[in-house]
Each structure stands twice: as C-alpha cells, then as structure tokens.
Amino acid sequence: MEGFTMPLEQVAFRLLVALVLSAIIGLEREVHGKPAGLRTHALVGLGAAIMTICGVLIAEQYRSGTATTTVDPTRLASVVIQGIGFIGAGVIIQSRGIVKGLTSAATLWFVAAIGIAAGFGFWEISAISTSIALILLILFMKLEQEAERLELIHLHSEPEEKKLPKRSKTKRSRSPSSQSV
Image (cartoon, rainbow, N blue to C red):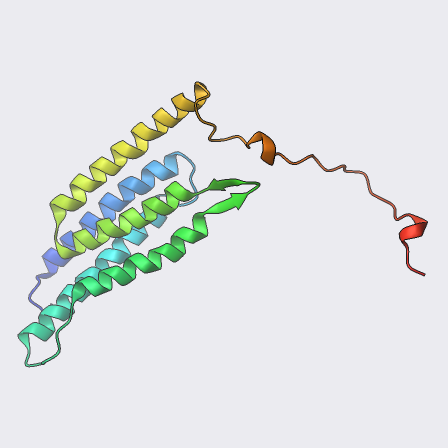
C-alpha cells in the first residue's frame, strides 16, 4: 500500500486472523441456535480489525510525516467497543422476567476485542483468547445443563412468582353498565 509502512500481506493476514477466530466463536453460537451467529460474529471481528488497522496506519502516517499532530490508535479501539455495546443491546431480550441473549452480546463484545488484537498484530493473544473463550462457552454450557438437570439452577423456566395466568381466548362483551351513553 502506497504511503504506508505495513505490507499488504500483513494487512490481509491480520484481517484473516480476526475473521477466522471470530467466526469460530460465531459457529459455536450458530450451532446452539443463538440470535447472533457465525456471520454476525465474523463481521464484528473483521470490522473491528479493519478499524484498528486503519488507526495504526493513520498513526504511522502522522508519525512519519512532518505533521505536529499525534494520533493514538487505541482511542479508535475504545470507540469500537462502545459501538459494539449498541449491537449487543439489540440481541438482549427481556420477557416475563427472563433475560435472554446476554451471552450472545458478550461474545459480540469479545470478537470485537479479537478483531482489535488481530488488527494491532497480536496474533498470539487473539488465538489464545479464542481458545479459552471456546472452551468456556462449551464447558460452561455443559455445566449449566448439568446444574439445571440437578435442579441447582433454573435457566430455561420462569420463576414461580413471575408466571402469569393464561388469558382466556373467549371474547369479552361489554356490559351495559360500562358502555358510555
């Protein structure tokens, strides 16, 4: 790339690392039928890497030129994380006292971090953290299922005090006393 110190092959490798590692987390979510799956996670990780690489390249351009302004690429990374909060909020659903989608929101935040790390060129951190997260997602889901089976926790049922009575499906007619004259 003309004018930048990072070779195109290195840019492509950083983007590929972010894409593949984020897609691995997304695949785990997809297999379990979660609202944000493979493509969503892959795009979030890739997008975070693109923004991070651009931040690095812009900082290098300002540093190597005669400009007196300095650029901090980590500030761009913090904005990425804030933006992911809005996407994560979109996958969280609250209904009848049960909150769903928190893990999907957390994994979106996590793959943004993978993309940022890959964008900065920290392959090892990206790969190790992806491995740890995948083990966590798989192992902890099995632990949660076993704890629910043993009735130690209740993940997929409504708490007794939160259950609402079922509505009658018959039409109600308005009584003559409630009708206005």
